[in-house]
Image (cartoon, rainbow, N blue to C red; front, side, top):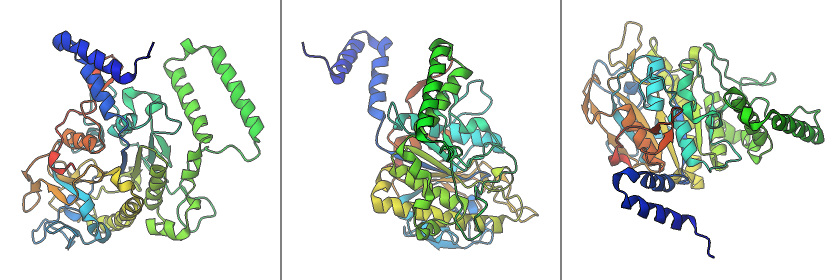
Length: 448
């Protein structure tokens, strides 16, 4: 007898569901799930903690008293202008889509971070996953032998829950590179022999075994660990023991995989490393490229130096701070896109640039800009995006959105669509309640 295939089974379930009316919506959800998962798309998140100033990067207001010190620079797209300190990105504007009308209601770092990373207002008893973690689940293979989500240089101090996998569980937590959860991070990750002119060395702690541990002893240790786990009993491995088991197994699989080479930036030429920038963000972008090349689905790189990791929190001395950060961003992000484009991977990889909010149009007495969630900018690029486009507008002084206000959930729904995932895709929460990836309406005008 011929064995039924998956397509035949699905068609049968859909037919049965149609016969019993609205109560049988699950076959349609299953069909949508199968259609949206494993699209082959990749995602790179460029996370800018502290809230980058939109008026000094991608939405300048020349001639207005709120405009500040920077000049506008014409990009490769007519009518689209960036800050003068983003010249390399300006040359690649045909790949970028600006959302200049972000409008959220959270002006606190912790709450704003949670909102833009999960699409949910903070304070709910449910542990929502960050969208990068949720998308990694959808974009990765069902039984990956490599991490689906790698986060480089994260500082989770301000809100740890905004960076984790929430109710998706420990198996969906990101693998972190040079991460920290402290107020005063030391994220250079440099070794003692490194000089100021050498590239920062980013590494995964404890990824490789001690040099004096031979392969045979390592194999015997794993076999002994497996024996202990088996004797403990699978039924006892729930809660914390289950998490412990999952973390250990993931670590062992990674250590034995070919992905280890992706974290060794010394395999790149000195010239390549310098093109990305010798600083931590530049080397993080280079590592992101290497991970995408090896089929990791979601990679995040944070520009998170400084106390608390809030690099862009420019309450004082805004212009020198933003100039310095913009120059680093411009060099590394532009090189990342150039390399992805040359290898054909930019057609498969979506890039998102975002922070938790923007900065006030009014310049304060300390030559700084304060928190401002009322009208700010996020940027999308690459796969699934209509490059060279602009959504929304702000007033002449930047105080308010004058066209197409965009909520956090709408922006994240757009990101889902860009990587080929239906934002209505559901996951089962801890209380057995189906939860959508994000409750928002995508911005179809910037989707390719």
